[in-house]
Amino acid sequence: MLFLDQLFQNIKTYKDKPALEFVGADKTTTLSYQELGQAIEKAAQYLQSLGVTGGDRVAIQLPKSLEFIYLHLAAMRLGAISLPLNPGFPATELEYFLSDSEAKVFFADSKAKAELDPMLGKFSHLSRIFVNLGQGLNLSTPDSALPPLPTDTNATALMIYTSGTTGRPKGAELSHGNLSTNLSDLYTAWQWQADDVLLHVLPIFHTHGLVVALHGALHAGASTTILEKFDAWQTLDLLLSKRFSVFMAVPTIHSRLLDEAGTQTFDLNFIRLMTSGSAGLPEDVFERFQKTFKYTLLERYGMTETGMNLSNPFEGERKLGSVGLPLPSVEARVVQPETETPLPDGEVGEVQIKGKHVFKGYWRQPEKTDESFSPDGWLRTGDLGLRDMGGYYHLKGRSKDLIISGGFNVYPPEVELVLSEHPGIAATAVIGCPDKDWGEQVVAVIQAKAGLKLTEVEIISFCKERLANYKTPKAVKFVTDLPRNAMGKVQKNQLRSELCQNKTETV
Ligand code: AMP
Image 1 (cartoon, rainbow, N blue to C red):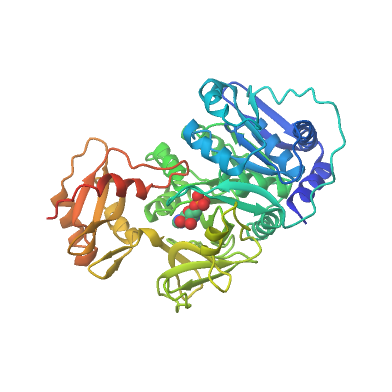
Image 2: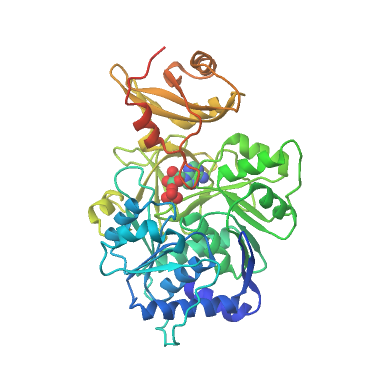
């Protein structure tokens, strides 16, 4: 069943049951399934009055809000394409997204009007709507007949621009069929239940917060409490309140919860499902979470282009350092990156994925789409990893991040893991910088713990005792903060361009 069919069935079945509770800075708004259904229909009529029809792009650059959710679901309901955009994108970046997508309508926060208006003037055919958040959509649109729910599984429902670690961001097109396949996989694998209550703290312009968490709960007929902004104290307090059975987060958030707990321990084991993803879960966070909260986090792996691919089992072993096993309808393999021949278990290569959840392609970029698939139709994820004897996958970094130094492959996560054991290091990223003798040299970028002063010599000798020589960083750069994107992922591209330009000193 398609996601929207399931959602509208849930609206009928669960009527007065809370669907969404939105906790904003000033007020909390609760919406039953029936009220959510009405809000979606009203927003769809409004979009229709703006001329939006099937296939049109509806760009939504609103902060996390109920208005965002209504418009997003209404766009898909109409058969149009919902295009969520990070509210942090400045006008210059936004201009690219609007012109590349040829969006028909654009929604933004009324507070951003003055900044965006001059740029928006360039788009003569774009309807631009500035929303006063927190007041609902306040629509005076007359009732109008809506088309039936979309039935074409292959029609694009959602387009999300990928982080774009290389080149310009590309719009990944996800069809109604892609979304539904993945949701039913997760429903089964994570044993979603209608009486689940999700605590939602993630951004909703990204697949993790929007599709995996929010759609996941709506698809299950569950209730969701949405925090407008993540706050570690508030989140921990709510998790301890025993109201929630599902919590999804990125490693940075799990770390912040651990910092909040400090030396105290709590029992969160009554929570049915707590997941981690979007970036590798450091082993010490996994272990500290077990000690501090008596809960073994379930790590999973996915990407914008696919939704979720691999997950540790809900029942069964949640393995430290592993992203788990393929979801029910997902096929996965590890191949030698150049020849794309499958590798035996235990060997590191590129992780490739197949399944009905894999995206249609990049918006108007057929060559880029072709490049992202092997000749026999597997998606090239660009992630390196291995499968162990038990069938569990372990990620070893991005292929673009792989460092080849003196002909040897160095997987940054292995060096990062060693560095994370140093008591003075708060966070670290290992990158390759060009080197005339070695091709690339291993460079450690270090964020020291507050108030501590570390030296390059000390870090290098710490690594020398624990790593082969070719894996040991040849240079160390200290930063006050590692650059991260909205999902907490370290932006290694930025580090490479900022720190590799000047020849790094070798020791
Ligand atoms: P995005 O498209 O922004 O969701 O980014 C997808 C990328 O995030 C993947 O290709 C991986 O590199 C990374 N990723 C997602 N989940 C994990 C995980 N559990 N461990 C390590 N990396 C992950």
